Structures are given as structure tokens and as C-alpha cells.
Image (cartoon, rainbow, N blue to C red):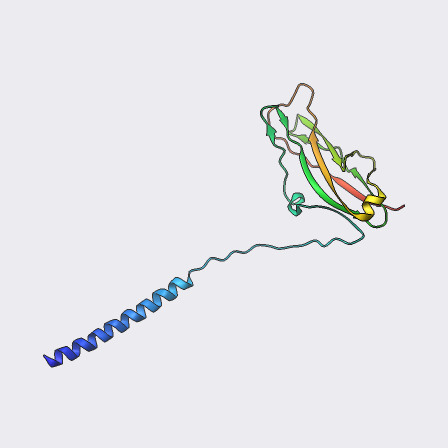
Length: 169
């Protein structure tokens, strides 16, 4: 009986030891579970002399969607603010091509304004020298021109190509 108790005590110690080892292994596995998140980071640091940059850096990197407003039956204009500066003079802008949304046979013309100035294929002064030297936040607005006969249902796509130039006095 004494021998059985001694074996039972050793048996308990062995079992408790094994349970302790199993518990440690299980907790190590629990700690080994992890999630890894990877994302890209970039920065554009403009020169101090001249820049025209959207305040939302992702604006130029992704397609912009003009929202359809059911009640008035119109397209909501796109609006984005830009920080601009030219320490040597004003800032001029122009369109590289006529901006339109198209689905093949149909198209919707777009009006583009920058700092309140309507842009065309001809260069236009959009930020005067005094404002450009100090730096300023200005609005870009892209608005649809309703076609004759109204809008026609469909998927439309297009591009707006803007060119900005530093104007020397």
C-alpha cells in the first residue's frame, strides 16, 4: 500500500508535469497566431518654388466617379482643393484635350474650372502672381454639361488632362 501511494504520488507529479508542458505548448501556439498587414507608403515632397498638388493625395491616383443625382436628374460636379505656389510668378493652366465622358456613340462634355477660371485648350492665368508667390489653396471643379435632349442612360468614361505652367513676370 505504501508502494502504491509512492507510485501514485510520482504518477501525479508526472501527469501534472505533462499537463504543465502541454499547457505551455498550447499557450506558445496561441501566441504564435498572428496577423500581418503590409501596405505601401510614399511621399511626394514638392519643390519650394513651384507646385500644384491636390490636398487629397489619392485624388490623382484613382478614378473619380461623378455621382448621379436622381431628384434633379443631373450629375454632381467633382470638387477637389489644390495647394498651389510659384515663388517666381503666377500659375497658368490649360487642357490638353477637350474633356468628355463617353460611352461610344454618346458623349457628355465637361466644364473644368480651376480657382474660378474656366479652362480650355488655350493657356489661362489661374493664379495671379501675388497669390501664387504666397501660396494658396484653390478649387478644381469638373461639371457635366447636359446634352441636348437630356442625359441618356449608360456607362460613361473619360479623362481630364490638365497642364500647369509657372508664369515668369
